[in-house]
Amino acid sequence: VPLLTARGLVKAHGSTPALRGASVELHAGEILAVTGPSGSGKSTLLHCLAGIVRPDEGSVTYDGRRLEELSEQRLSALRRTEFGVVFQFGQLVPELTVLDNVALPLLLAGTGRAGARTRAGAWLERFGVRGQGGMRPGELSGGQAQRVALARALVTSPRVVFADEPTGALDSLASEQVMTALVHTAREAGTAVLLITHDAQVAAYADREVRLRDGAAAALGVTA
Ligand code: ADP
Ligand code: ADP
Image (cartoon, rainbow, N blue to C red):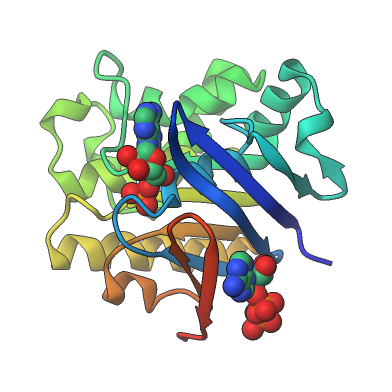
């Protein structure tokens, strides 16, 4: 049984159709790349799967729960505890130190400050950015910022990480470092990853690839 299943998703932004009946399955521990041309609906699909946006039609089932049947409150609790997200431009909080950025999801989940900082520090260490813990996000290189964003997405030990072009703003060496860190950690923890990318070298890290075309079809190829 897949961990996350989407069936027949339809979503329009105003009069612009973004998804026209997309279906996809993500299994526990699987790394799935979602590829396709710009405007094909990849980000919209990710937002629907992660419970950030509600589709106009179709259903998303996570671990036996239909997201469309959950209240906003229960959906946001589920997102906080089970999902991690990382976007193209880390979206770290500029006023907080790097360490506190990573500790933040734990604080929101009710962990005490000292424990949250200890765990956050361990995740920074893992991603090779421990030395940057006291800096502000604006002082980091692009690759460092994305590794911090990954640490923040993983610090709560989510079962699914949604990554929307996490290497989109990076050169190829930094991309490789970010992807190696993500894949290694996901494998070790058994985390499922839904990875949006337009970069074939990044998609090659995935177990499987689903290609969106006009928000609908998924042509499939096994990559790794
Ligand atoms: P992709 O991630 O593959 O580039 P998106 O899901 O971002 O595709 O976009 C799918 C379509 O929906 C595109 O035509 C895009 O212009 C449109 N779209 C996405 N977000 C918005 C928005 N907030 N408002 C209006 N149109 C949007
Ligand atoms: P495989 O078994 O090789 O992984 P599937 O046929 O199960 O491939 O398809 C995987 C996903 O892609 C499914 O969720 C399916 O709904 C979707 N899909 C495949 N072809 C299409 C299509 N033509 N239109 C819409 N979705 C499609």
